[in-house]
Length: 282
Image 1 (tube, rainbow, N blue to C red):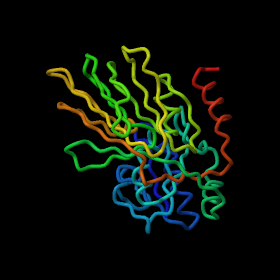
Image 2 (tube, rainbow, N blue to C red):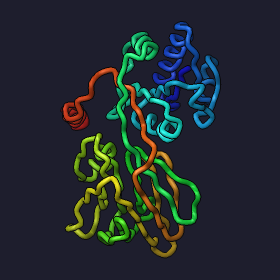
Image 3 (tube, helix red, strand yellow):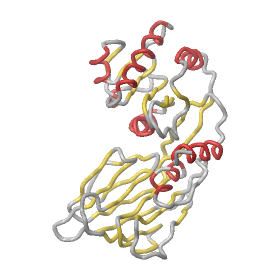
Image 4 (tube, rainbow, N blue to C red):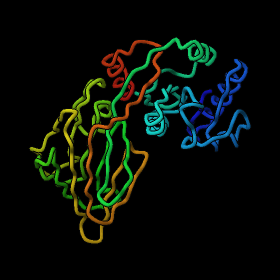
């Protein structure tokens, strides 16, 4: 049984989901669609992403860009379900293939003719909040809609690294080092690494450079917003919380991992080079 998750904002993605679901059913396999997608297409079984279980679903298939894929990962990691990303977007750095041959995709999934690539995640907790938030790419504490700078104290294992004044700070995984972190001037880490990158955003203190921490490091971010202002914490750019009071966030390596389905051996630096050329329009 396969679970289809798609970007609701793109017509071609919805059409591709219908084509893929139809072919899956014709192959004799079951297909479950995210609730809104099922209501639109009336095919397969209807179920929310949060309602699926490991015993029912063997693969999550995401159709869209990296943002769509990222929304599936906390659930996939906790349940141990592998994920296949089909690129219907523009960037697609985490995605496996473009939408060119759905029949071949179904055949290879059915015969398990693929490899699993493991990626590490980080988890974050907020003081006074019981929820734990998982992130594949990054946790970002920022000024959000507040026009003023915020001051963030940054600790690793209770040792103060620096106090940054600016737009905030990024705590990124090795996978996330090619996302917002890279755009903000951070280093690129190979995705197999378990390290975490700390990168101030537009800091007024120019000497505050990125810091690369090992997998065992535990990060703490503490910030007090200016009077009458707010700040924001974002997890993979998908879950965003506006904080009116002091922020006290603890971030560390998560026990959960994501397994991406790969049909071909991944050449990270080749992929990085090609994507950078694509992003620059060359």
